[in-house]
Amino acid sequence: MKTIRVNLSDDSYNIFIDKGILKGIGDMLAKEKQPCKTLLITDKNIDRIYSHIVTESLAQHGFRVKSFTLTPGEDQKSLETAMILYEACFDHKLDRSSLIVALGGGVAGDMSGFVAATFMRGIPFIQIPTSLLAQVDSSIGGKVAVNHPRGKNMIGSFYQPLAVFIDTETLSTLPAIELVTGLVEVIKYGVIKDAELFEYIEKSLYDILQLDQKALLKIIATSCQIKADIVAEDEKEKHVRAILNYGHTIGHAIEALTHYKKYRHGEAVAIGMLYAARIAVEMGLTGSTVFERQLSLVKRLGLPLSTGLKPKDIIKTLYLDKKAVSGKLRFVLPTGIGEVIISDQVTEEILSHVLTGNFV
Ligand SMILES: NC(=O)c1ccc[n+]([C@@H]2O[C@H](COP(=O)([O-])OP(=O)(O)OC[C@H]3O[C@@H](n4cnc5c(N)ncnc54)[C@H](O)[C@@H]3O)[C@@H](O)[C@H]2O)c1
Ligand SMILES: [Zn+2]
Image (tube, rainbow, N blue to C red; front, side, top):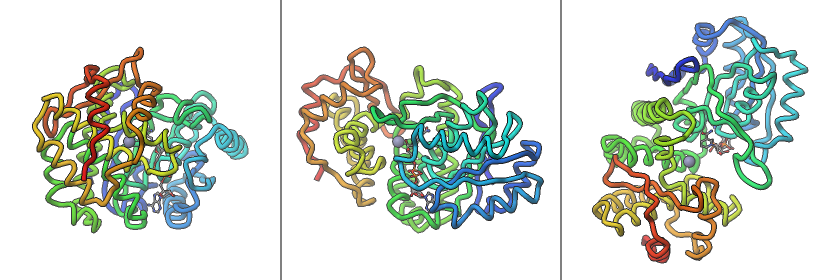
């Protein structure tokens, strides 16, 4: 079992990672929290495979569990769903000593976290992430949010869980495309902070995709440690946390322009990382191998390499992004594998030149 501490003074918590920990979750949780009324929030895909394991283990340790099952999908991450979940909280008579359990991918996690943060001004919650993206990214760091018709994740808060429990075996039922797109975030951690992790992915990609449990434990624990360290340094994204947005600046523009329908998040981010790496090479910040190594991994994952979008449309959308600071674009750019800088020196000329090229 790997235990990673997220150091946030009063809001510090542990991330527990191992294969098969779901069935012992009640025992582990009882060490963190008195048994109490508990609302388990999950989605239909996960409910049929995992809810009973979690519910039984929690019940054995005195937690009184009711569950609520969401329809899977990003469009469930809304204020309307929050209202329905508040009803479930009232029906189950939750109070500030109760618990919300998020079991699922990033949608269930963000949705549950948002409800936990806001019901009675905040009740404790834990995360049991079951998708690779949720295990290495969305379950850590306390960003909770729902979507608004005018923008994704626009209504939210920072609210830390009591603990995060990651069972690497849950990835055995995750659709292959979700595994591959989740892996893009792991590659991102390698580029921004950890050359050794990047190299490990290059060497062990086959094992990872075959769900070798040792390889999964290694990449997930390393990713969680990197995110935990960054969040501990900058919980509210005032400075260094922004490096987690590597590949996301252009990635978000691609997602927005294609109305979040054509590309999965990880696909758009992978293309965004390649563009960002190319920009860095163009600006003389790094050598071309930094770009080529990322390109090679993205190719091996079988992810798309182009979008067919017009550079001028991408650029226009970049300026609309909520992360553009007072009209200036900010990019996270690699200066090597494992090192990035935040730059507002990317000119429209470089951008347009790079966006006009392709990666084949
Ligand atoms: N809070 C944050 O810091 C943060 C960071 C990154 C992403 N996010 C959010 O995360 C969401 C995306 O998360 P996601 O990719 O996990 O999406 P998701 O929750 O929709 O899960 C993807 C799909 O996989 C299924 N699934 C998940 N785990 C499974 C398992 N073990 N077995 C079988 N099926 C399984 C789900 O039912 C769903 O159909 C987005 O809403 C995004 O905004 C939040
Ligand atoms: Zn992401």
